Length: 414
Image 1 (spheres, rainbow, N blue to C red):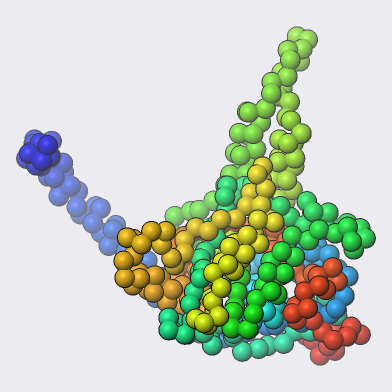
Image 2: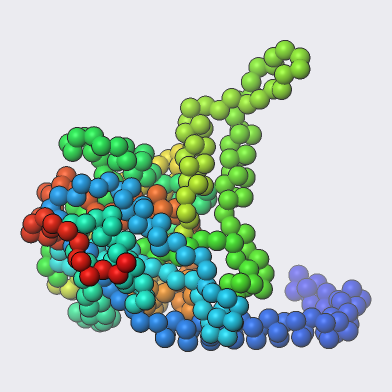
């Protein structure tokens, strides 16, 4: 077998191909060099642009009673949709990119907090839009909690540190607040908020334990030369149309009718619901998304039972017929022989911790770090990140304001 493989390189066909490649080198070699130089140049410019942006972390303190449904949060997330990086001069001379944001729910020793990470130039706009939808909240710029954590296996043990992905194609939506009826106004005791499981889990952690959920989002759009790409990348709507067409092909054919009438397929109730959800989702603003989750604790306070609770909290958003979440890449390994001395895991933890602190995934320095972004719409994002109502008052460690505010700050920009 080896001799046969070696003989291929000495065959007439191989020699002919080799000569053809050499002769055409003046065509393909410059193209490869130009593409390589372009990638390095854009990477350098974007790194410089990102490092020049001042970043802030905003903590949102919510009142004891939240009367707005997740639809109010969806309206706020709509305002974060910005699919422009500026003109061509800014993109290619300055490295300008589309802005991205991080929606974060964090438990620090059982104290559950809501954060939004952004560039400083968007701070006032975000505050204004938040107060417009939630007049009773308070928004404060705070030190970054993540920067206080340093990788030290002797003091801190990571139980789970992973990136999440979807179980099906992007075209299929997850279970949203509309599916749970939270867009309506039922009595409090009849509401079923899928976020409760995650908040209850986080609130049950003890001192010395932490759990982080980071939802990175960037406006999804067709990409091309205006966004620093030589090749064109289409948006996701054609993928949705393709999936809907596939569902219709699997539908039950209708019985043959009278001549002159077109025979059509009959969708089952389940297929109708899936198509309706997909079409509703297609009408929303879409965001490129990456979700990272982590559970870790001081070594002596580490509880391995809390690993499953973190991942299990995401099942509330999943459906057998629609979409759901699953871990895609993490710092740990399934079998001991994959990492005998644990050095790979340590390296992975250090790099993912750094990526988390930088909120980096869509652009350098951690562009597409061990994965590709998936797509969630404003409706889906509002389901994952919204302020719970008084039905979650049983979570005493959820950071709330001591009393209801009368109005938003008067010094907000107009």
